[in-house]
Image (tube, rainbow, N blue to C red; front, side, top):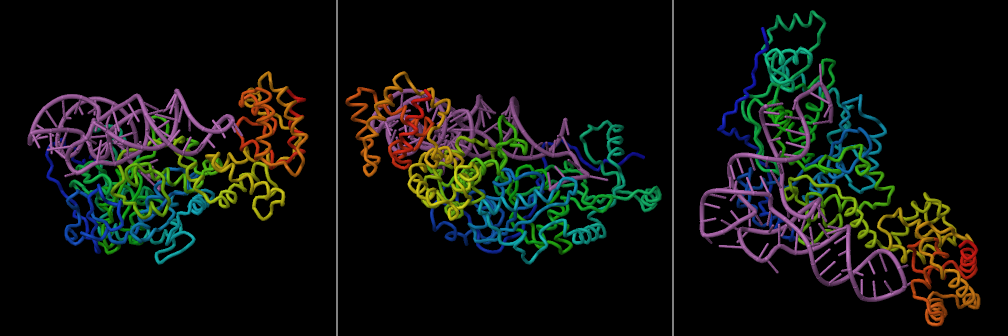
Amino acid sequence: MQGVDIRRRSHAASHGFCFVPLRRRDGAAVPLPRHNRGMTQETPQQDSAATAADNTSDHSGKVDLPAKVRVRFCPSPTGTPHVGMVRTALFNWAEARHTKGTFVFRIEDTDAARDSQESYEQIIEALRWLGLDWDEGIEVGGPDGPYRQSERTQIYKDVAAKLLEAGYAYESYSTSEEIEARNLAAGRPKAFGYDGYDRTLSEEQKQAFRDEGRKPALRIRMPEDDVAFDDLIRGEIVFKAGSVPDYVIVRPNGDPLYTLTNPVDDALMRINVVLRGEDLLSSTPRQIVLYRALIELGVAKEMPLFGHMPYVMGEGKKKLSKRDPESNLFLHRENGFIPEGLLNYLALLGWSIGPDRDVFSMQELAEHFDIRDVKANPAHFDIDKAIAINAEHIRLLDPADFLRRSIAYLHRDGTVSAPTWDDLTDRERTILEAAAPLIQPRVRLLGEVSGMAGSLLSTAEYIEPEPDARKQLKATAAEVLEKAIAALDEVPEDEWHGDSLHELLSKVLVEDGGYKPRLAFGPIRVAVSGRRVSPPLFESMEIIGKAVTLARLRGLQNNL
RNA sequence: GCCCCCGUCGUCUAACGGUUAGGACAUCAGACUUUCACUCUGACAACGAGAGUUCGACUCUCUCCGGGGGUACCA
């Protein structure tokens, strides 16, 4: 006997909607029309009483949020942290901070084959570096620990047993080969999925399988109704009856799967708002069905609200993949993104703080963020705009802070002797203090600081010009250097200041010499810095001093 | 195949059903500047298509087209 096809694949145009009654949230409702939400301080509490009774939606079609959300970030430790993951963490964090709610951080490491300790540690490091602090979870603890799923296996075993006993789950002995073979034989498409064969197995049939030495997987029995929910970002979403097959929650070897552990932990940790990536959207009906069972069993108290954030896209029309270098968080850090800049940019992907505004602080983000204002369509990661936003935040940094953050990069690049301010030499500190204000508005990434500060910190008597700098040198360079050297040589040490040097060289080269400013100062810049782009020339000369300046001018002269 | 999502300048976005459809990045052209950068000015550039509702549609409804995701004993 072939398996019973329990799935209705009806094309019937009209379905009676089976609306899932979302649990009433306690606390104040926040029925704000989109156009003015988040823009003013007083919006949240005002008119809440009016629609608090109706939880599912208000007049603007938005779902009401719990007064205090409990959200979570629950990555799997596979691979290096990527920007899509950061965005997910960010929006959860922002929603928690906005409502003065709770941000829970848990790790979903139920897939031993793919998870790694290294990745686990990197994720923690990533959140810490970004400043996305959590209230309960990994390393900080909390009332619902442990927060690492690999340490919670007994919990899942117990829940699975209850689910099986109460009939929400059943034993499934079919192998994937058998399922595929049955689908093929019945003329169903290969991607049809599980056919429900084991739903109606008799005790004798099960025993026969056991006698063969087979062990069952556990599957959840999906209802023969539409499954619907109100997505916080997308509005009502209905999955047609029969479109979601019974799915496995426990492997034959007893390993619990994400499909079980995720809802169970959300329930146990009293998560009331689930904000995650769009990729999980199609698994939501399965979770809702399981959640209903958990509520019946007393494991869960209420159905959480769901919000599915759009993808972060890479080149072309594809989701930013983990392989894509632009997705690698730590690479952005190495390049010199600062958390404020990267996070600000990421928040812009799908959300905006208000018209005509795109640079803001994390505090402002927390103040104004509302997950219901997030757009549903995917956004491309645009590295140029990300860098531009980062540049704005770098300029906003307090100069001392800018300096402090730059040291690690300078040390990495061998430009200074130590990784922290206190361990630098006096000379390095003096030079950097003078140079920092000149450099800060000129870099967009902290990784660019070394290139700007290098010629100032170096005592080299000759700097080989970078290729594009050498190209700037025209035929007149030799005469210009000659004249400049002669004039500068006469300047007494105690009159070696930026303004007077500027004045002197303008007179000698531009006024008397008749050179265009570009031709007059270009060679000097190249000699002093080796670069086409550098900190302001005369300040640079002042910083490196008379001796080094003259040495470098002569050095270039000899190497034209 | 079936299920689900998405559709405003190149990109990210704004716009109580009534605006010359706004801003940002990028691009181009200028100003300022010793170069670069910063700053400032200007230019270019969009509602996927078609119906319907309406006095009026980017906005509401439907169809189509296009794109994406899922259809696992991954998450």
